[in-house]
Length: 330
Image (cartoon, rainbow, N blue to C red; front, side, top):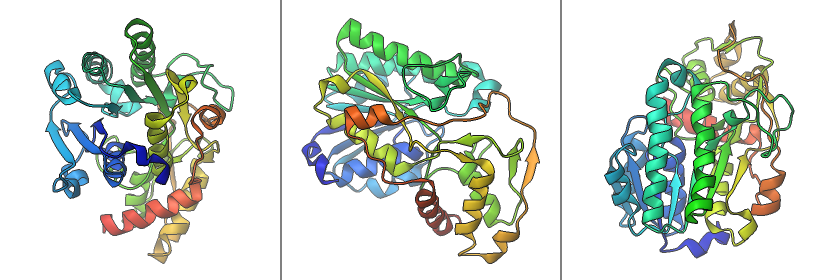
């Protein structure tokens, strides 16, 4: 991370900093001698994710909710940059409870924009989502062409992009949105009703339980390892290219993997630790409401304007993630 040394002693707020992506961002920033403030209400984040940072003099924890504007104002005060990761993820969760998803992802997002504007934050980087592409079928997905959202969650993430663009044109707040594509890696939670597919399958394989694939397994995703996402956030903070500001970018690898291929990779790398996992069967269930069949990103825009260069493809990312899960789920 030598190219990011200009961040030393800068002040960066990471909302949702105790979550999967947020805690990885906190760690990367602390490794660069950044003064990091983490804001989290621990609704989906976890204390153990940030426990190693609590003794670091450059780390400050604020326990609070982005639905509270006063909390947002306090957190944004004197910050140079904001990495806004706090959100209620999951398409099924938003279908079950659209009101809470909207309150956090839209009202909370607006609170953060207002607080960042009032604190004169230099740049506001936020987690957007590939779900914004909705029913647009063309592959690969390019940033300028989207369809209609297919879930309340997708609607909230699209509204984020509209608000961010408006806050630049109206108030001059520089923003960058990162449309995450199926991020996975260390610290991603395998527990709970809305666990992401990779950590859930890993946990099930370790316990010799059969994972359930929604549909026939032909649905595909551009699975994106956490290190690629960290790189994109750091590039978004540090870029000196003015053309790169006030844009949204696909944050992905530019390759797609079917769910059948995914389970084969998981079996391959987990079997190093437990050969019995290779014999665990896969179960097929019905397709899930709100799911898109295929997702594949073009990362050309990120490469052109941010000098993005993904370091991990699916196989290398799965291997590293499996190593971490084996150590931490046993």
